Image 1 (cartoon, rainbow, N blue to C red):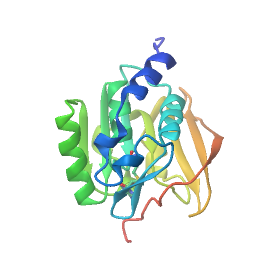
Image 2: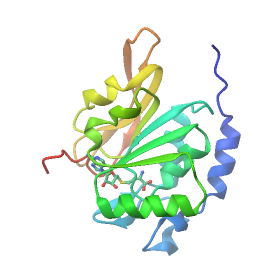
Image 3: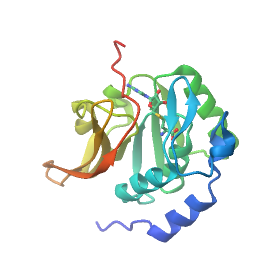
Image 4: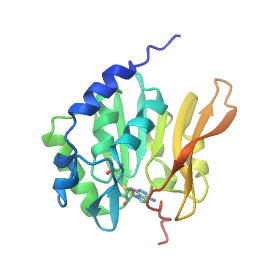
Length: 196
Ligand code: SAH
């Protein structure tokens, strides 16, 4: 079955109208700058250009179920929700999970499902996912996420150490074979292990 992807222009235009300050509780005057900003609890919201390029790399379509690891402020979640069927988002810091849930409901999204827990395990209940996005840096790609990616699926994940990571694109073909490539160099906060 051929799948109609969202037009890049539609994604860019929604993105340009999305007010990042609505997803920030501090330093809101920096919302318009293309730089990462603090969201509390030692976490950051990425620079807008990276949120856009990761969203475009996913090649979202309206029928897609998307798994997001690292809800954070919910800014990236909003982008995903606008251009997919359902977003399943996982966050391990309870205060951020609660805040993002409240904020995205206020913004009127009804297709976002929130889970408070460890994203290294994915979210088995609703797997498989057509698209997976990880917004924290992993030492290596968690196998659970690869397993929960559907055939013809795409995942973007920053892989590396604290200082520099490669943003990996992981594609699973219709037979389940996996192909990995590097999109760009990035710097994210760490994807914590559940023991930390
Ligand atoms: N996409 C977010 C980015 C937030 S920063 C935004 O737009 O604001 C990364 C987030 O990943 C943080 O909120 C952090 O708490 C979360 N995180 C880190 N390790 C995690 C894990 N193992 N499971 C779930 N969330 C995790």
